[in-house]
Image (cartoon, rainbow, N blue to C red; front, side, top):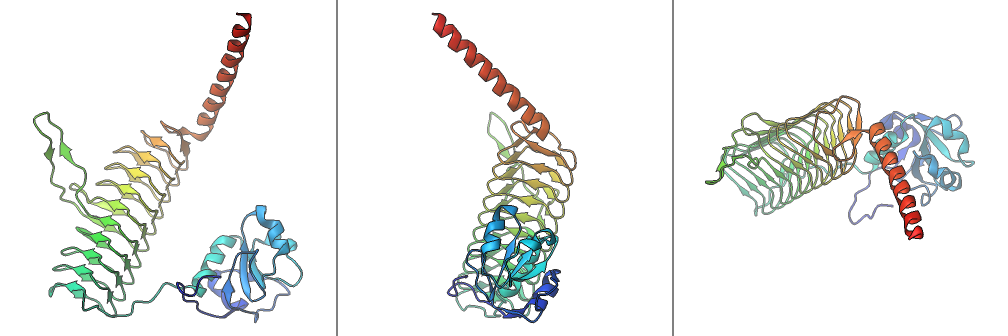
Amino acid sequence: MADPRFFDRAGPFTLAELASRSGAEVASGADPDLLLSDVAPLDQAGPGQLGFLDNRKYVEAFRASKAGACVVHPSLADRAPAGMALLLSPKPYRAYALCAQAFYPLPVASGAVSPAAHIDPTARLGEGVEVAAGAVVEAGAEIGPRSRIAANAVIGRNVRVGADSVIGACASLSHCLVGDRVVIYPGARIGQDGFGFAMDVAGHVRVPQLGRVIIDDDVEVGANVTIDRGAGPDTVIGRGCMIDNLVQIGHNVTLGTGCVIVAQSGISGSTRFDHHAVLAAQAGVAGHLTIGAGARIAAQSGVMRDVPPMTEVLGTPAQPKRQYFRQVAMMARLARGRSGRGDEHDGNE
């Protein structure tokens, strides 16, 4: 159960209400009026709580669970213990997430503006905007209705933040336009200079970075992420992208709809990710490349050329999955062979 000191719980909800919110189906024989008060892991859940099963590895925990109800794939419904009510979904993890959101919705902006905030008289705050102590909203900035600006965040001159968005503590935004329902986590840096200069032995010459960062609706930007503004074209983060903590995104990068960028990865300037591409942890992508729609780049890969749509690559330099593992297997065979010959040689000596 979530610690009530940190999380405010809504509900309770009936099984039917949760089915409606999540798109799941109440299983035959389950009581749609069953009242549930919380979500919990299968091995900790009790009679009034909802669990979920999305991985066959946990079937035994499912069978032993005391949860009052569970979200599960229809193919595993027959493994449920007697008396457990089921919500059936072909995507149980997604359905569970929507149920959990019902119990633990994002906090609503209070509309309070702290007297310790610093707001320029020319800035515009929409109805119900919350601004915490130490936050700075500079001249000409515009904050949409019901958005929340946390402590010590800085909203730069003429920046626009849409409705129902959250700007985390100590984040800084400049030269950017941010959409609706965007969450920017603490410490993120949006819109600073891109890394652009003309190299010269007489002294490197900085190139003015004259673009912006455009963040579309329903994007999440993790803690301590840095997104550089464009050098001339804009840096664009498409609708519904999910960006993990400690990611670096260079100038002029474009992310299409629904891309996923995982922690400690980096994207060099002017590279384009088409919709729903995935970049896993600690991977790096060189500049001026195109990563095709639905492509998946494995953790710690180094990408130096374009990746076709729906292709999975890994390694440095990154290669298609089958080719990479074929090379790994070949190297292992060579290493075993060399080791064997070396042992025989040592013995003959």
